[in-house]
Length: 374
Image (cartoon, rainbow, N blue to C red):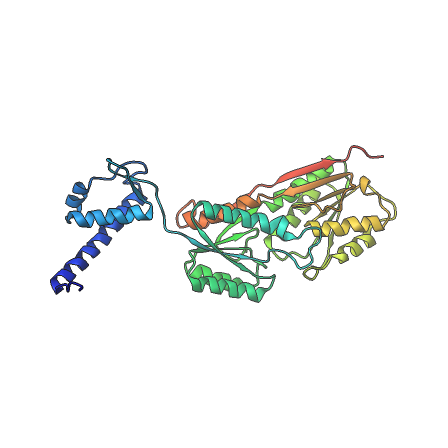
């Protein structure tokens, strides 16, 4: 038969439970703040009993709870020690255009840009004890808007976003900022949006690539790009144009329309083939990305040019099809670091309090020259 407890006994248990929680929370805060350091003993139970003005059983129960959580450990015949600091788990929303294209051309953006970014985000978040909530836009603006709204409704601790366009969906991004939720843009920034961003130095990367092509002896440059739709496109175009002007290169910029998702940018091949003179000259082809560069490569083959007498350059990975070339120049972005820094800003806040952090990370060049020309 179960013993019936009196109202006074029930009240005493409730009071002890409330005090136990208060003491447990106070001890946890002392561990996280560093007052009780990792590897060192906490005050004895008698000292804690006097400090908080409670009975021995309440202190013992609070310590037992923290031992169960892994913050404290008991050693036989010795005192209780701090094992490690644990901070509340941060939940970060990540909004990306896609993971892969329906019909990738020589390796899609998932391998060139998206995957390294996501790897950096995931690794840094995991190392810091964070959790990711991934949302894909599928390159659709309406889906991007819904993803931002859904993450806000879920109450994530911050959002890392790869925006589809620098002007479209601006209101949706402003809504995130106005809510007070931290927002970090990656790969490209939005000039009209005052928020954190982490990007590559696309301007300097493009400038350095053009300078290297001139150094390699190519006196004519063809730059192939899309109509600028984001800061990445604009900064690369400005870098090329300023390098051409300062270095006094003979150049032409070929602008092609963006192709439907998953289709080969054959328009690039056709437009470039129309521009090519009948007689081959020492020309370098620099494209905004590898898919477009592949179109340029196919164009010169169709025109009867010898690729071993031309140079090819682009951002990120070179198309595998380009196996015969006089030289190749690849602008390498620090994609893993971009991902990691975006997580740091969400979890630690900006380097300067009450400011927006704008990180522009340097690129490097990967250059290969074919010295076995006929």
